[in-house]
Image 1 (spheres, rainbow, N blue to C red):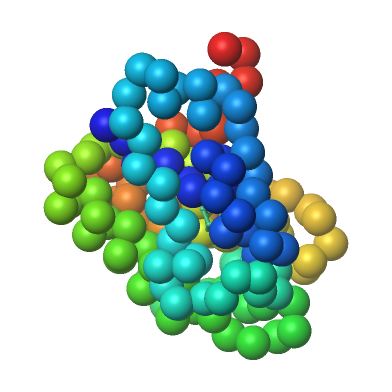
Image 2 (cartoon, rainbow, N blue to C red):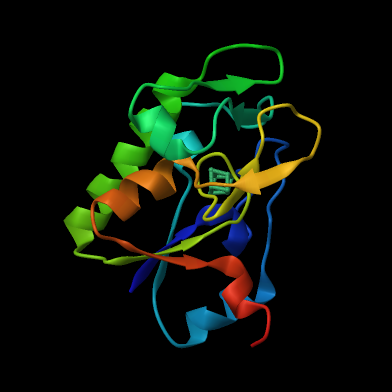
Length: 150
Ligand code: SF4
């Protein structure tokens, strides 16, 4: 059993009200149970919503209160991102799950790649807020692109 970014499994929870379906991840369901979770929704954000980006290098900085997460209209959504990250961690602990399949480039779920905070499409190295917290707590993060060659 693994937790998985819900949008990868076809759940329409992304900021634009769409999914980010990954057929290779969905194919895994034939072999094991994947639990869909969306940290942004679990943090209390609506769907659809404005796009959001971390104003710093990584979700690590957000967890340490060094940088904020801002939406495209300038509203501060840091609190919701941190709350959502801890809700995902709570679900993992309730179920005893140790692995999370992460949607890449998201300010919540991204693993190793996130947008740079300028809303210009530029990618930098870094983790989303939920991924950063899960890594700190010893959860194994599996990047979605690892399934692209399946
Ligand atoms: S927070 Fe994660 S699960 Fe939710 S839409 Fe963004 S990438 Fe998908």
